[in-house]
Length: 215
Image (cartoon, rainbow, N blue to C red):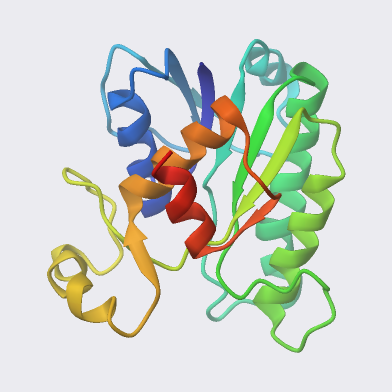
């Protein structure tokens, strides 16, 4: 399959990218980001897009792909709801709308987060906004849309963009006793399997992602 990936300069996106580059199921990857991801590989091509909401002529370069793994995102810490909405709702919805025009037969896999509020009515700001994004993406005319809600993730070996640095890999076995988690490599494998063969539901929690990764 031919895959578009966003967020390769962040932890989740970089991990999923490395899994895709190693997978025999993935023929090529187009990384769309605001700055170079720092990875070189025969399967990889990069498209630098300063504004995902206004792609302009670059939109045409998104045609001819089978799947998009939308891994771009940001922490809500210290952000107003308005600013967080621009990044977490407006940006993925605008980007995915452009993708749907170019690839209506595409599968979109969007990384959301554990405890996201699909009702859009809760008191937790970030969960509400993510839920709004999930719902909007599921309404777009793709072949399929899946929202992944991972929690604690162990980095893929060789990653450079890791929150908490090498310490997170060391502490992962202990943190996993308290928080539900999985290797980030499993998230990547589950995305590939969802694009290849589908998934049983549109919103996948930690246990669902683990099960899909094992197929």
